[in-house]
View 1: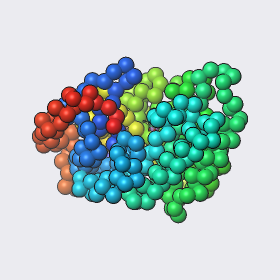
View 2 (view 1 turned 120 degrees about the horizontal axis):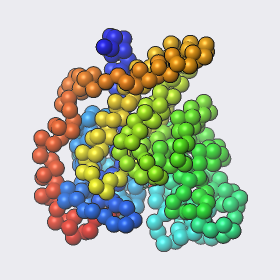
View 3 (view 1 turned 30 degrees about the vertical axis):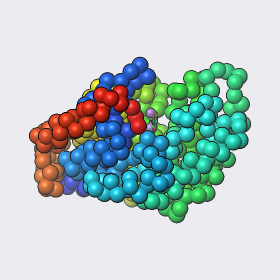
View 4 (view 1 turned 180 degrees about the vertical axis):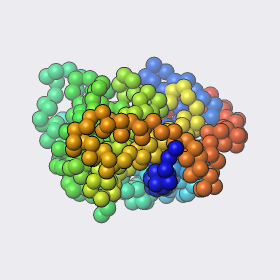
Amino acid sequence: MLSKQQEAAVWKALDSFNIETPSWGFANPGTRFGKFIQAAAATTIEEKLSDAGQVHKFTGCCPSVAVHVLWDFPQGKASAPEVQALAAKYGVRIGAINPNVFQDQIYKYGSLANPEAEIRQAALTHILDSIEISAVTKSRDLSLWFTDGSCYPGTANIRERKRLFAEGLKAAHDRLAKGQRLLVEYKPFEPAFYHTDIADWGMALLLSKAAGPQARVLVDTGHHYQAQNIEQIVAWLLSEDMLGGFHFNDRRYADDDLTLGCIDPYQVFRIFHEILLFEWETGKQADLAYMVDQSHNLKGKIEEMIQTAVMAQAMYAKAALVDHAALAGLQKSCELIDAEECLKSAFAEDVRPLLADWRKSKGLAGDPLAAFRASGYLEQAARDRGAKNKMAGGSYA
Ligand code: RM4
Ligand code: MN
Ligand code: MN
């Protein structure tokens, strides 16, 4: 049984917890081996925002949507006011803006680190256009992920490319408005299979520092080597005031983009624990963007996103149950078993009844997935979009 005090801690945590959904998670993506089309998948930015609106309507914790400029702004900057208005129409707002400097043919040998100055400039121009879009959509974060790298030893000058990245990111940073942030994401491999220019958190950290004071590191939970201790990275970045936010997803092998916590919920809990422990110790609020970065080949997209939001809330609530004062004492006196049990007992609590109560207090259904299923939205979407999906063959766009 949870004490009144513990219940209050969970309640407070839930009141402050939001997680952003990705527009691309509602479309028909797949793997590089093929796509299995879903009749109800979103085919336009309007449909993506409508679906994201459903996730927020039933969970109450997904008020914003990250967008990919190339996929969601058909006319580039000119589409920004319309996209902004559509978000409002469906009860969400536009969150992080993701430039796309990896899909166009010109980026075969890289974007900001391309050996050709003209292509570097094209990439920078797209990033600067994305900053202009963020002014219209009132988005705080510009979220940058690069595929730059090389596939064979000896084919690229690694140090020169690092220099070019520092230069390009600084040029982008210089255009940020006050209060905006540049989030620098890292990933060890894919599509570059020998070296990736921003391969890990250390590289992202150094480049963020080189870019300027409004740059932070973005941790995508799927972008690590097997067995890497992600919560340690989180703790270090927090202590450096250099953690900007997350792309949440789960993985079993590599960058699998699986549903958050489907393989290892304890990992998610441990990440949230490091954040809440930091806040308790320092009395500071960690200023982080919690975002989902998942795209599902097989599961229903809206249902999967609801599962994700519910999982994130549950893990955050469990992390809020850790008795920080007790844990700090146990760590100091090296009482290993008791310290570990202190952490694990919070993880073991069943917070579902409390989550349901919290939802009901906000006028939401206790079980968001069941409520969404009962709404008939999915069946209607399948009817409205089925023919389009069949014809289009489905894509991220
Ligand atoms: C990448 C990375 C980026 C995302 C793209 C679609 O693996 O995680 O954040 O924008 O996928
Ligand atoms: Mn990501
Ligand atoms: Mn990824």
